[in-house]
Image (cartoon, rainbow, N blue to C red; front, top):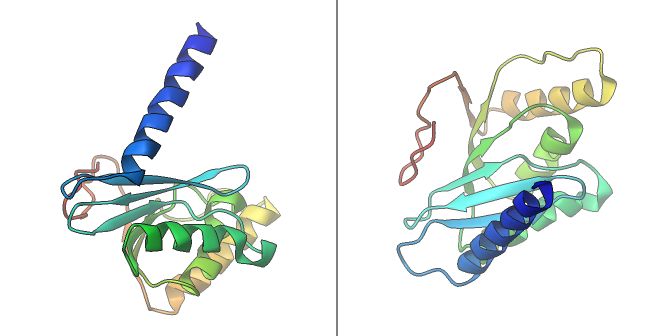
Length: 157
């Protein structure tokens, strides 16, 4: 049963990836970006609004940020409207400073304060993210349960 579910998941992922490579004008495009041990996902609506989920690792000569920027360019966008951070672990949030140094981000969406202050890598990633927010170049939305995200062309709760 477990292998059947995994096979189905892989098939769906492959179909979504193929569809993203050859979209028609009115399609939602989804790009799965390998960030070495995790995944960033870029959604691009037919009218070119964008949502990126997670940013990958810091360092590595900007490897993850470069991969995200390459996907954005492939999608025909020169900025990312929204970045949603699922949580503050370094492999999800650590790439924020490098990403914003390479491509403008309109708005960050997160769940609020750090809840794991005793985990140094997580605390460091959170501090670096807070520094980016404090620069004032991007807006910030605190997500709450049941909230509809304000992304034109995409219904996301």
